[in-house]
Each structure stands twice: as C-alpha cells, then as structure tokens.
Length: 376
Image 1: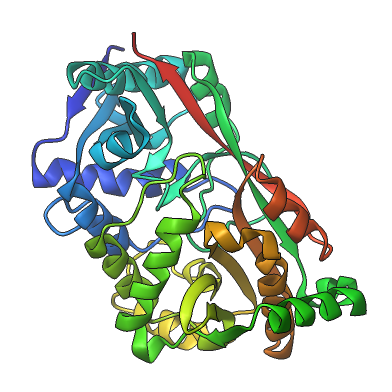
Image 2: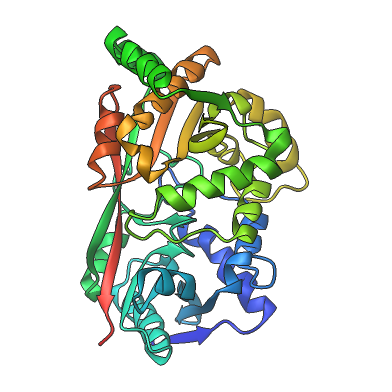
C-alpha cells in the first residue's frame, strides 16, 4: 500500500501526532508514559518560550490508511547564532518497524530543512539539548529516569539505514547511594574539605521557596559553565523560568546545591526525585480522573533520584567541585532513604565529569546517540 506523508495543520492532526507516542510504544518494554498535558505544552508554539527563536514542522506518515510514524523538523536560530553554523534538527520520531516508512519520514524532515536553507540536520532533539534528546542505543533492560528518552530497540537501525551517522554519544551513569557512599574514601572527603576551606567556598542548599531569585543565579552559572559543551545553547530568561515552573513541584531543597565564593555563585548541582516511578502507574498519561491521585500520593514514595544538571564557572573548574557536589548528593540521598541514583546525561568525551562520577563507584549503564545527516 502507498505511503503518504501529511504535514500537521489542524488541531485534530496535532492531537493525532501527540497521541501516536502512546500507540507506537504500547508494546515497548520498559517505556514509561509521560503526561499528555506535558507533551501538549511542550509542542505549544504559542506558550513554550523555545519557539520564540525556533520553528517546528510536524509530519505524520500513513500506511494503509493508518498512522505508521511521525517526525518533527526544527530550526533553532539561537543554536546557529551561538555556534556560528547552519544546522537544523529532527525530533519526536516514532515509527513502526518499517524502513520505507522511516525513510519517508526522514525525507520529509530533510526536505523541509533544505527549504529552510539548512546544510545539516542533527537529532533527535525534542526539541533541543535542553529537553529530552538522543536515541537509546544501549540499556534497554531498565526503565528511563525523569526526562530521559526510551525507545524501541529497532529505532537505531531505522535511523542509521537512512544514512544518519553518529555525531555524539551521551552517557547515563547508575549507582546506589549505599554503594557510592562506600566508595567515598576518607581521603576524598579530606580533599573536599580542604578545597572548600582554601578557596573560602560556601556550599548551601538551593531553596524552592526562593526559586525566582535562585533561578537567576543558576542561569548565570549555567550560561558560563556550559559554553564549551558540544550542543550547548544558552537559556533565555523566559526558557529557564519555564523550566523552573515545571520542576519546582517535585524539587527537593535537600538535593540541590549552590557553591558560592564571596557571596557570588560559581557552581550548582540539581538532583531530582525520579517522578517516572509515579508516571509508570499512569500508563495512559492522563491525570484525570484517577491519575492525579496516583501522582499526589506517589511522589512521597519515590526511591530513586537523577542528578539532572551541574555547572561550574569556567574559571573554577580546576577545583574539582563536581566531585564535591557528587559526594554531598550521594550522602544526602542515602540519608533520605533513596536506593538508586542516575547521573545523566554526560557527553562521552567529558573526561573531567566522567572520571568524577566513576570515582564514586558508578557505572555507565545506558548510552544515547545524537545523529547527523548532511543536507548538501
């Protein structure tokens, strides 16, 4: 039967696009349903501040008059101006195990990006490196943590058979607070204490109640610390406020740290309870009528955490603050009764960060891949 690509133009088609994520993954082992309201908000081009500097085109693929796949083509002018390049992106890819369908989807994204005068496409980005990104290529046997991707095992084959090649791999590390605490030697703690004392540092908890003022400090450090990172794009004020608004309801002061010198922020580390433990009990992604109760009562029972982001100002990265943050996070997670911890994602070639994580007994247990494809 013929394959048909349909650009999403109506509200009904956009709902079909969003809902297809559940249809495509209903038999995907270990997939965890996101909230439908979160996915709808993410793709709301009028309210998501990302789209103040980006454009997106959604496509559905029909085979035998049934939806067989979807993809988005994305431009992000903040990325191009910051990196002085001319790339576009693809994301939100879901597909049946059929190469012809996958090829049609990638053709649609590539053709749209060519019309936008882009010379390369990277993906998956949903819709940027500040959101969910990467295709899972290793570690299918465990469930994803908060804000991490999970996909069927055949996706990498479909993606690579089209001609996409590796751009960069992202690593996820796993440990248990109990195991890592045993790997934190007295010497490591002495060194950490000496560094804090020698450089007159203060390490305090980030306050959720003061999130508006705290987020300004976090943005200041983040946009300084990450400038050397591959794929980094600075947050706008509106974007980081949007992220803070989404996460403040599950954030825990005890698991978030700010390092200061002379009263000025120089580093931060944010670890969040793994809300996916609750979301997996809401398989259809709908909060109403019963999902809201599972969410409200389930948050207090979460037993795992994810260190979601860390940053240290460039001029202080020689201090080893990453290790100090990890030591404090592991000990606090242990005190609070958490039994599992993921640290992700980390670029495969970020040796400084990867060595710090490995030093506390963590293991790489998942890998995600960002692909590239030349359009010229």
